[in-house]
Image (cartoon, rainbow, N blue to C red; front, side, top):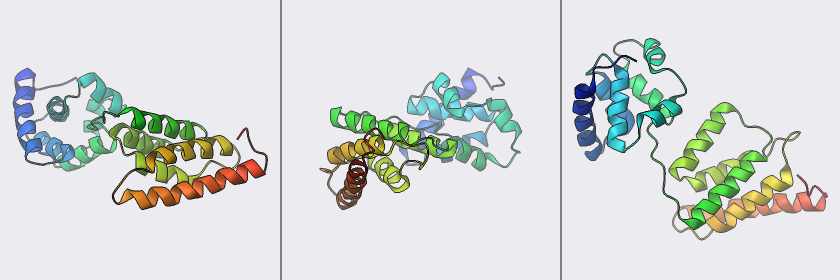
Length: 201
């Protein structure tokens, strides 16, 4: 793919590190750097280097050809380009989970698998939230939507959410009351499944 070369990317990477340290978001930094080069993917590579994300992973997250993405935009739309990279989760930095968080994430993935299908946009959002460690957000989002009426496995879904919620419940701060309330609702749904004999989900 077209590129300004290693020297250009290295120079952009230095600028990316400075801007990120100053508190700018990766999307904003990408936009700024894209405005400084003809090859916008070089800006993505520079931000990726600053965040410690290899090019292979950046490409995997984009799910598209970088040149085609740039070809769909026009000069002056660098800000939109940065936002597009953010929307695809290109710059997401994976959270390092402890043992409890790993178990919570496993329960949440089990619940997602028991939903009976997830729209692609929603699936991308849930996947991104899990990667960056927004476990409470995933828990509450899944509880709000519930399993699909015809294809979901309700008992398995609610059981997995109850297990996740019980591990989340010790959290402190603003999330504590929300988690406790949502957990209570999940337990009620699971009890309804049990009473109706829907054990297999």
